[in-house]
Image (tube, rainbow, N blue to C red; front, side):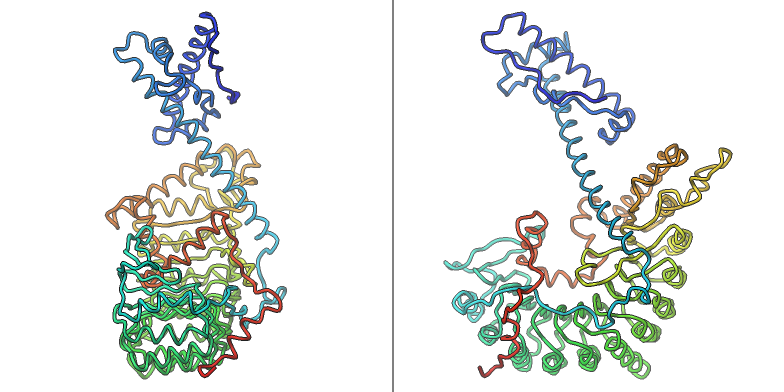
Length: 632
């Protein structure tokens, strides 16, 4: 049922009475026909009008957008079509107006749903081509370096001292998030509504965060920053991401922490050109602090030589619970060395404080899997979160499984884009089934896969029985993500069903997963999207049982929503906007939230800016940063 999108033409001023009457009759007829259509669609889908219209292969005629209204240029004749449509009603125009608003909303909602679905189709098509082009990954046929991708900061330009001076002066006066100053503006952090004070370069939040992310203090100004903080007791969380401070910065921070070891709880130093030697200087100071709880070092070229420094950091910094080593060139050999030292240490010593460890994009492979398994197997290992996405783990994943089975503290395991296959994941699911504490398992794809020379996971229909068993046997599970997968809606055997076979009892594929999710007592998030949506319904059996796939998915979604509301005491929408992030991440991530990073990410999503990922050839900024020391 498709109709034209043109409006019913409003009569001109010089129109005859017959023309006006015809316009009113046409408007009334359009109103009645579309109101009847909406009523019929509502009976098919009471809670989702657009879904009901789609089941009828219909849509509300967009000409209802031009029906006369009380408060429009058509307001004069509005009473007339109302009387025609609802004769004898005591307040016909108000009833008519209410129904027109409902019809207009149906048109606009349908358009928005179409746009959303078209966007999904484009994204799915993109993932389909990417995954199919790669196929199941095997290191022997398509080797990936075990050194890990280069650890470079995002391209930036160094700030001059003058642009930073007002913020530094505020800090040196023991300034907090309030200030009636011409150079600063008060505001609130989006969503969390935390009060903040923002300068041209630099933000202070009421919870003690100092935010200079992407403001590029550099090696020339880091000394002045640390000096200004000597007289400031308000700040607790130091956010200096992508500021390329280099060895000079490491020396300045080292001296500050030696003098004020318990001033900061959080050190966010991502993208600062910190190498192994510089890390050693920082560790020399941090180990004396009882205040430090989380350290973030992503995109610093620590290298494999950093393993002994990292070992010293996590065993001697007594309250360090979160350590971020994403994309630090640690390498398979370096990470294996680190975990071997830790495993040996735990055999002779009490537990360490470390709970959350980020190791994404470090070239991790078989050496790391074996050493990490030994570390996790220690009785006093207390690790809760393990993030290892975009590493060439592939067929070496089974080496990790003994440790997963024995680590009773593990809550989160994230393995996106690790070149995993059905064969390598089966042993993991067996090891993790009925795990006493595992709440999060992520086996999806990462958007940065190609940028970091990683490989997609390839989990097909053959893995579904193992996944179903894992879900059914894991009552503590609350978050499972498979992302885009080469699975079908009903499984490979579904298209061969005989007419005597009960399809509901024979269904496999993603629908079988949805059935397990629909019955799970605690799952709050589940995600699996087929890369074959346009091929699912080629056979008559698939087409005839589309209702089964949709109904099962709907049951799964309803159960997820019910579990969310039961566990969190809030609506699904409120939870999705706020608490959901803390299923996947520890709450320490709040200490590194930056309005600067979030603004740029939002602009990039909206297409308002392009995030530069690579330095221009011949740009000498990084070389300059590495050369500068405190004396220059």
